[in-house]
Length: 65
Image (cartoon, rainbow, N blue to C red; front, top):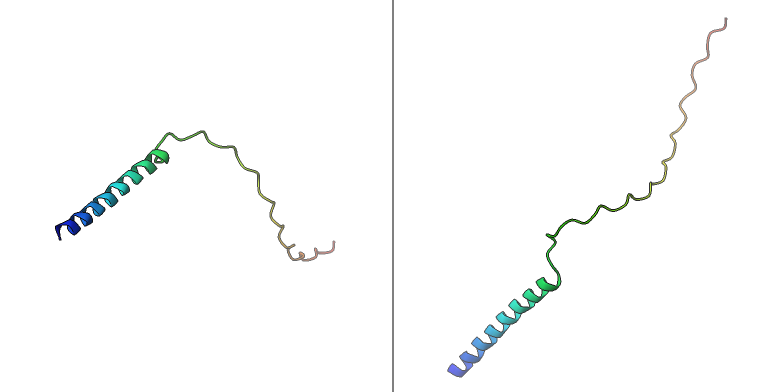
């Protein structure tokens, strides 16, 4: 019974250690995004011009002189 309990404890310890090691390695490989900001990029291209609106109604005719 004690041998089985020891094996379970060893397995749990190995899993915990492997998780800690893998998290540590991933933090070393992929640093957190708290470093200095880089230079600002170039301005992008301008977009397309929009369509023109509909023509308004014709005005009333003027009075004859």
